[in-house]
Length: 273
Ligand SMILES: Nc1ncnc2c1ncn2[C@@H]1O[C@H](COP(=O)(O)OP(=O)(O)OP(=O)(O)O)[C@@H](O)[C@H]1O
Image (cartoon, rainbow, N blue to C red; front, side):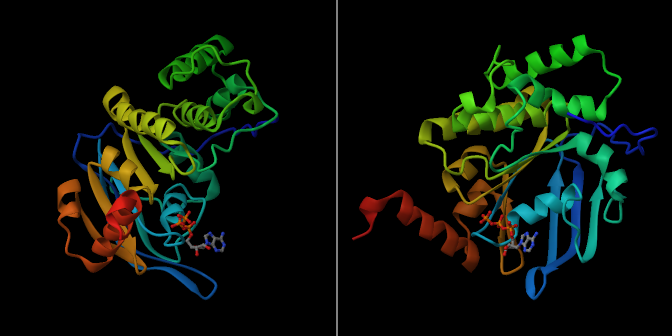
């Protein structure tokens, strides 16, 4: 597998934050795809050490928000700040070191099918730290696989794995570089309840074991309430409410109420008659 070796990677200094400090700030974000406006004027803060859940219906722009953070999508207007430093205008090259600190766990795990589990997890290490000795790469891979409860699976191929195992390998790969921020794109979509619970525990243990900050985008309310310290609701092209779980449960914001009530019916089918 070829790797692009960069002579002098641009630097992006990320200082270990104090828990609770403002880490990421989305300011007046606007984004459209052709005639489709996704954000009009989106404002959102993420605090160090928290798990922030972004809720919203299908196609409201949850994934695009994560992609804007790491430069896979570009906002049309507005700013994104990391620890006060604006990254909105960063080039593709400048975003590379940002992605060492901010890693995304993609919706479908997105493993390389032709690479073994071990090679998949090693991939970002070889990309970001081409000089890292092989022994250290192996040790880090083993450590991350153990952390996601898949010790000793280095030699397996993605085709040998269940959906839940693939998600966990995707997580091990995302955390290989010890990122401070983990972005989770629909981590529990399409998984059975037991696997969903194990992914929720995984999200919580990344916070307690690694002290990571997480942004989780989902429309799975059970998962949202299991992992979220705070929640943000994306609707009508903006964030309509940000608050704690309790503030959300008691919310009178119409878009939030409608979202929660619709899913309560889904969760308790016996209640509808
Ligand atoms: N590369 C793209 N080109 C054109 N339109 C796009 C692109 N990426 C996203 N969109 C559109 O932007 C809107 C928001 O997409 P996004 O994937 O963020 O939604 P989402 O809230 O994550 O939805 P879901 O829960 O269904 O994954 C959608 O209407 C989508 O079709």
